[in-house]
Length: 185
Length: 191
Image (tube, rainbow over all chains, first blue to last red; front, side, top):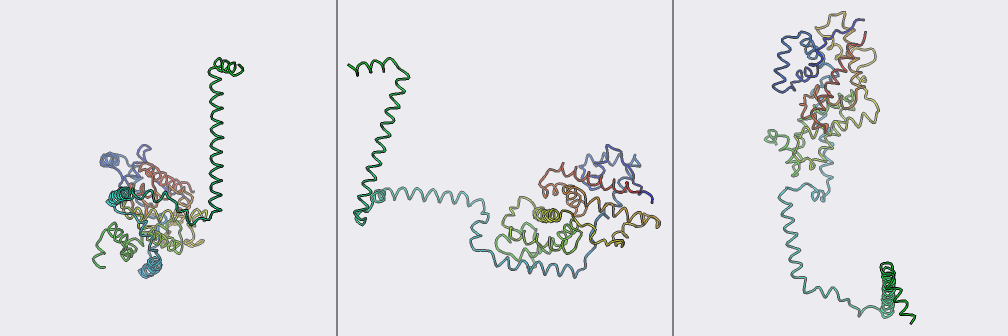
């Protein structure tokens, strides 16, 4: 069996010739390659080879019109259930036009301002808790809890004081010794 | 519906987004052949190509609201088709290029290959060359094959292929050149 004879191109033109064949060179390249092709027989042969065999590689056989009719009908019938299935809330997540962003922002800010202006007087009503309906046992427990919370606070304060004292001793040992003497006296 | 046929792809997609889902059927009509042929070039099996390309339409329809018009509709849609084909190829681990060729039986493609350029006694060589080229295409890295198929078979520009493959035009040029060089090499190598 013999070889298929293909023309070799000039090495520095090979990539450009492929792009030239596909019409992907810019005007300058096109001119440069065109001029070279008029002079170089092997590069001309290379492009002719591309023209000959590239369109034939792995091409699909043409389908009949009946195939395409079936294909279309089948695809559209597959699309039908999808058209019905889309839930109503999908529209909320759909991309919105750009003008809606500042519009929603402005409305949000206005609602916030209105809320702050008119809600200010009633703020205390949120702070006051209705205690009339709460059973006495629960209220007593609540007092105990508050007592324990205040105890925790006191413990924390005494710890802070101790920490302050130790820091003070480290930075000024003489004064702490004097303080000790005073205490013994 | 008839006047809608004249609309551009992007206008039809926009109408779809606004709820006129029938407009998508026009896009199906417009792109079914291209979608099928891309899938066929990847799979070499008509049934699989049909399933994959139809799945691409269903996905495009389901995600039509994500199409923001920054690219053309066809680059957006081609990306869906190509990604489905690549996923399919990965799942199967290899693409069955020869499934339609038939063992030992010369297909019409091979006959076409052996055209007037070749002398009758060289037909066997041409058939073998065709088989070689298909094998090379099969074993080619996915990116090179995608760039080659989109340019050579679908006629997409390098700029559009770059958008479909989410890469630069320079990279696509390199893929394309390497693919063509590999195919040429495979034709020259057999004795």
